[in-house]
Length: 192
Length: 105
Image 1: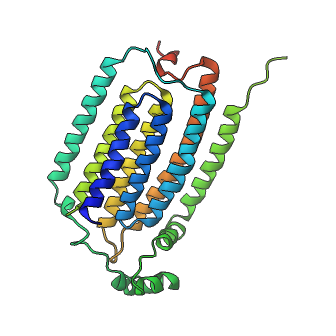
Image 2: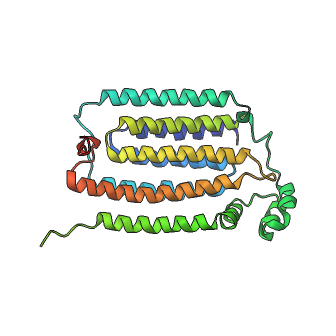
Image 3: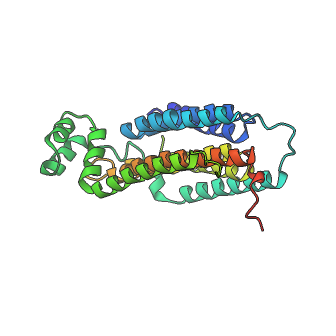
């Protein structure tokens, strides 16, 4: 990805993220969060993670944000007006955030690992086809030989080959979550 | 040239923004959005490490599987959390964190 595009999408992600933190109106915050997630999805795409980028848009910018907007409009939350600003919380929040950022920049600056670029660690698709050879499905090796990265296929292969049990646990978690939501939102009947 | 360090710094800044929001904001729904932002920032770091740690010349798909699980758990968490917020709103008529102080001794 050209550096210019990286900076553009990083700016979109962080700028709209800033708007989420500072916005007064919850609806503005929710829409800014959706825009921030779209920028983040573009960053995922720039890292050759096409599948993750697409589900980031589908799940986060789609489903989760609709849920947020639905709740905001259902509860009819008004803009915070006239409330006095909580100065100690804001000061400590900003201070912690700045400290954490500086710490991360210092750590990243002091490690060799951070100097890896897509030039000095290129994907070797044709070689990979030979190396994973028989272990992978023919459709994956064919894609690799043709010079394309079968991203979704490789993630699916990893998930079902190595993490089949974990996948079922996640399915159970979603079921339990759904039942939990129904139980939580059910209005209790008044005592007879 | 864009290095892994650039992605990690963007990820760290996004996480810090989310952290500042969680500490400073008082509207529970916005606190929740900031939590989602922090989760996504962690995902960005994971995907960055996955791309630059090559296994057989391909990105490390173990990390991307972990991101997949994180996104699923985050979606379930949002559903349950928003149900709790609705229940809270029903009993308090407010989504301000300072309206919930019953456990504050």
